[in-house]
Image (cartoon, rainbow, N blue to C red; front, side):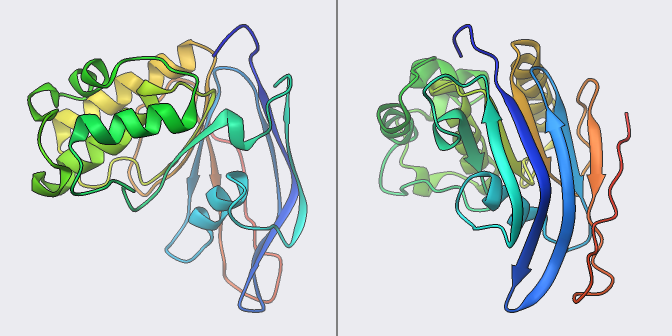
Length: 217
């Protein structure tokens, strides 16, 4: 991640889908070593928030900016691990990580070491199509390690993971925070993160501003 430690600033963010307001008035700031958990019922806008932070969805209102990033843009500072793993089934686990490493830059761990970190060293040469859903999820998470970027955006990161793999993920996330990284995670499941804050999005009335948000240590 280099010497620079970025800050993420979100101001009065609003989301509208199919003409209906999903949420409005979301504001928060995260600095080095800080994590935010986004909760709320299905359809409340958790994934939409992550898509906005990643630049894949345009906000209806508000602003998102990154500070202390030097010449890097926000997309160049982040990793997004979404619901879909984004892996090529015909390629091996190693080849998928090689591709991600070359595409994203900021090289860190070699693919073999990243797979070992998530308990998949034995699967490096296997086509991803032959892996279980949990194993595929771990390959997707290993992309966080082959090209380190300061901001991790994680959508239901524990999905398809067994208890042991969830424990491994917790270690990786806390190590990222200890290095000065930032995490924003949308989740229904509790995450064992140090000093985590929580923001809950409610959507009781789709036509009204419906962001019921607050910090919880």
